[in-house]
Image (cartoon, rainbow, N blue to C red; front, side, top):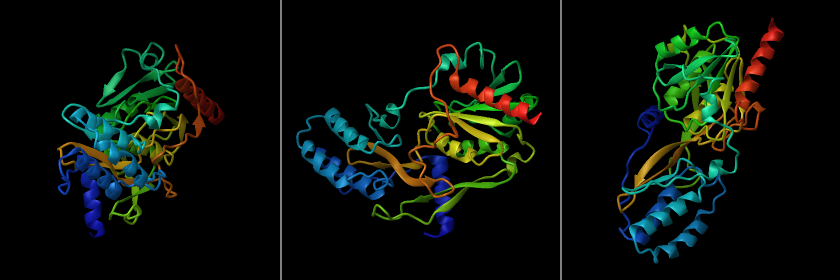
Length: 340
């Protein structure tokens, strides 16, 4: 596969999110499905070594349990438990009656986001504006712009961004809140980042599995923020990005990219990670297993699978106030006073 073909395939992954490839060499029995699942992960999953997982031990642990399975539900739970050993939020098992999901990547972290406070009287309020999937309003007596983007699955276009930044143009800075954003489209992540870059800039790398070995990965390719579509939209004042452990997948990529934006500070809690691009494969029983087959890295070729550490860590969850928004407002006003 040449470089052009690889790039085209990756572009399709960004658009489609998954591909289907049936695994036909195993019987549709409990043991056959568990064996198929183990082999798919062993050959296709890209984080076995990085996560320090002894996948052979997992095989020896779960294969004997398959012989005692008596129902579809028991088989589903067994395979789900096996997948959860990976500790990966991009790993799911899909059946007609259930979807497995791993929560271990955020469970040990405190929750710092309080939705009722963010949408309460002090911050976005009930009268916040909406441009595509972007929510925004003025806070701090009109001095600061608050932008909330709940999901990178919610679309927006260049004109949406124009109206948002035009409305906030007199502000001292922007608080850009992507806490509890579980991800979505990387293209939306790139587009949201673009107005905060003065020029096109590389922000990381990606590669993908090329063979059945755990280390069989393609040559790294650059990932960049392209500013050409937003060349008339430039935000040159401070922007503080708020993230937390629930900032996952495409949001994790966005947080990593914004570390290279002009006048940007990342504040809050370590992001959730999910630095892989998910694909899907079919088990003999027809269930689909989803997992990462593409890896992403920061500009120094460090994997971003485990999350991005903020420039300023601000813990805590307010009952009537938002600790992170208040810290961001203080920081922007402090920068404004210094530069007067």
